[in-house]
Image (cartoon, rainbow, N blue to C red):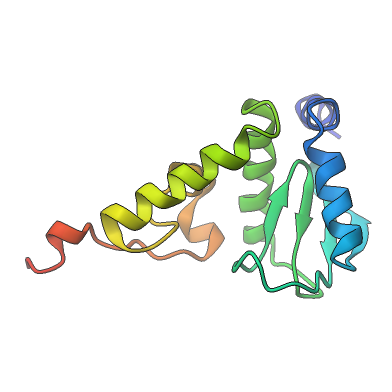
Length: 138
């Protein structure tokens, strides 16, 4: 594994994000497997929240599905890096604020969410929603 992914893995353990992700995977009944780039893939998460094909907490990628495509894994890999940069648990309120801002400006939780845009909207399967004040214009 590349040195930067080993470093990210260590940071996300120390900042408690990955232990939180592992706890969520256990409570959610997910089966964990090692993934690429130091990720832990947790399949079969049983809860419907949050509403997403997958979500990441630390280096743990959780999904209700039994597989993930490579593009979505790469998208979630970028979120794992964001957890490291945000020093762990502060990522939660920052992400929620970014999601709220996106809903305000375009009506969709991801289209203008800075975290989702940096992780790649297309790779995450999110739309490029127009700004509210531009919807009526052509």
